[in-house]
Amino acid sequence: MSTVGEKLDKVRARMAAAARRAGREPDCVQLVAVSKGVGPEQIREAVAAGQELFGENYLQEALGKIEQFGPEIVWHFIGHLQGNKAKDAARHFACVETVDRAKLALALEKQAAGCGRVLSVLLQVNIGHEVQKSGVLPEEAVGLLASLSACPHLRVRGLMAMPPDLPDPEAVRPYFRQLRLLADDLVARGLLGNQGPVELSMGMSGDFEVAIEEGATLVRVGTALFGKRI
Ligand SMILES: *Cc1c(COP(=O)(O)O)cnc(C)c1O
Image (cartoon, rainbow, N blue to C red; front, top):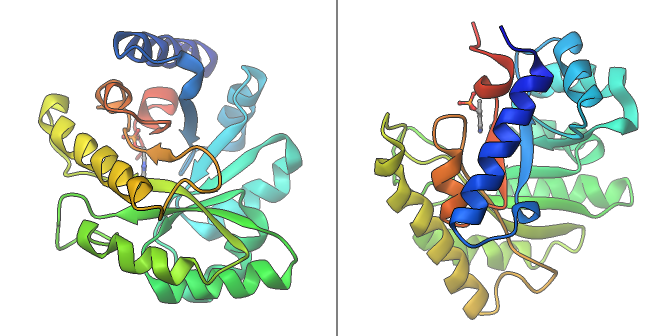
């Protein structure tokens, strides 16, 4: 059994190789270590191996860890967020990757303003038009960005997606590409990327290399680092 540190090294090496294959600099891609269901020992091991950025799906679980670890870790919220949880999300996370509706954006705006900070957010896009999934539909992203332009305490840094869950990573490639093309289109229209480089959060344990080849700047990896969740 390899340690978390060894798994981190392996994932980082695979990320760098995928970036080079695509003619990209390896340091354009950041690893979000997805630590849902993962205990403090394993998180500590990852931190000791140099990992600073973590992603959590469940607010209550995350708040306990955030309190325990303090500022040595940067946290992204990557789960479905209810509007009534906007206060904790706006206070405790560096970035909320799952903004998918105007009402949630307004709730986060209010809470970010209330604690005097500017919160980074990504638009979660339902790139596969899947009925059971969260995310704004690609064709509705423009409208959501219009709502976000009225939120001075939110900084839209880019797009996030969870494409259809297919066993063959090559089958997911077209969805990653569609997310990148959507981002390119929004940039060309002046709706995205006015506040710095555009982030694309896409790719998980089974397909992060393909996602990097298609332009991911953030990959969210859990199982490959911490093992299977029970
Ligand atoms: C759980 C989760 C991941 C990580 O998935 P793995 O397959 O374990 O790497 C990434 N993104 C989101 C939104 C998740 O919920």
